Amino acid sequence: MTSTPKDKKALIEAVRAAAHRQVDKWVDQQVEMLNAPTLPTLRQMSDQFMQTRTTLLGGCLQEIVNQLTASYRQQELAACPHCEKNLKRHSLNTKTFNTLQGSITLERPYFYCRDCKAGFYPLDEALELADKAYQYDMQEKMLRLGIESPYAISADLFKELTGLSPSDHCIHETLNRIGHLAPIEEVIPSAEEIERRIAAATSSSEEKPVLVVASDGAHAPTRPKGGRNSRRGPGKWREAKGFRLYLLDGKERIVQIASWHQIQDAAHFTKDLEVVAGRIPQDRVRIALLGDGADWLWTAMTKCFPKAHEVLDYYHCAEHVHKVAKLQYGDTLEGQQWTEATITRLFMDQTGFAIGGLKRMQPSGAEAMKEIKKLINYLGNHKHRLAYQECKDNGLPIGSGGIESANKHICHVRLKRSGAWWLENNGNTMLRLRCALYNGTFDIALRPLQWHL
Image (cartoon, rainbow, N blue to C red; front, top):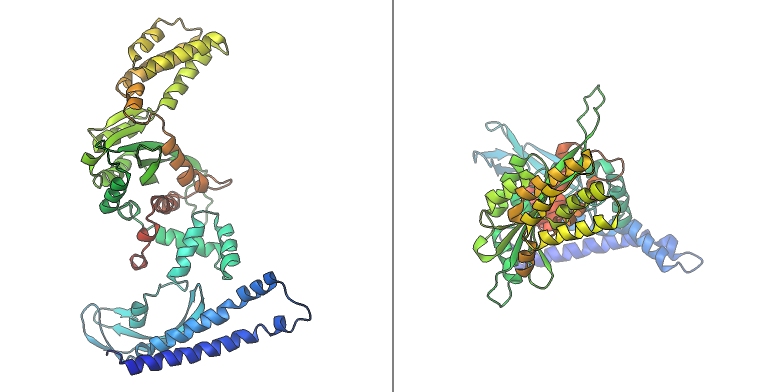
């Protein structure tokens, strides 16, 4: 039934009267401070307000909810959401819910369909209540803290900032439960959002912006799950395979498109990258694939972006050259000169000359011989990815700083804390949520209605 202006006016007056009652209760809690013999400091007054805020805000919220849900609490009949059979109220159940404003207690009519063997609370659905005591406003803030700091620290910060006290176990359980439901399709920006970011990075010139697709692995400490009566086994380091897509707008500015990291194998990594590739308007950008010498990442990137320009990370390549120089020449001027000459040849797209010089080199020992052969094979396998001067001339990157930064901020900052060992599923849940934050999709990936799934 639609409310009349008279009904709305009566509702507003009822809420106003209820709010006044809550203010009176709250003022009673300030009597000791108000009667203090000396002037309290502003900090003392602020602390007192924080300690008693739930009396005022939670009380007001309780009163408003009571007024707005009166008809639901009196409900005697409801249709089954599955078979639409009319049902009589089975019982009236009371439950306390915790919000950022304080706790509220609700009487909720419960209906049960014997045919469908399913029960439901119409009021819960109307208010979109979480099935847990902590409601979505609290859960979201718990997630936001939990993905940045260890759970115990997150619980302490939550209490300091809000005056409310969820346990570290509650934050841990909430993060794993909700983050597990955040799929790559929600964590990665939509095709429309990606097009918007590309449009914002496109200058007035005819040249298309550069889209960098960079891939790498970041090691994460994992552990097996222990049994009820048995100790867990030893931990081991697993590779969190990740990719980052970002735009270069010609002004030395990076525009984030999408990051995704998971502890998984190369096949799953490829499938995940395909999801993102399907959202990229590849005809509107110049695509550069950037990675080190790992075969799995090149297989995945070239499959998803077959017409892109491939670039071997310059700094990884230079590390191999420096290693040969160290074993062959030691810390000598000759070694420095050879290193600079070799890197310059690679930079100038003279890979053949560099390989020829390595083949003519007389190894100083067995280790030097081994590394020389490895470098020859390395350069030969990646010869088509070594035109660094051409990349610079065309505005393409040659270094993997973008993906290394993502490895640090997404993986290392949270997963590589001292003493931390992760179950694989929990580690992946954490990575998904951190990727959502990094991609600007945190709110989208965790829409409250999705948490019912």
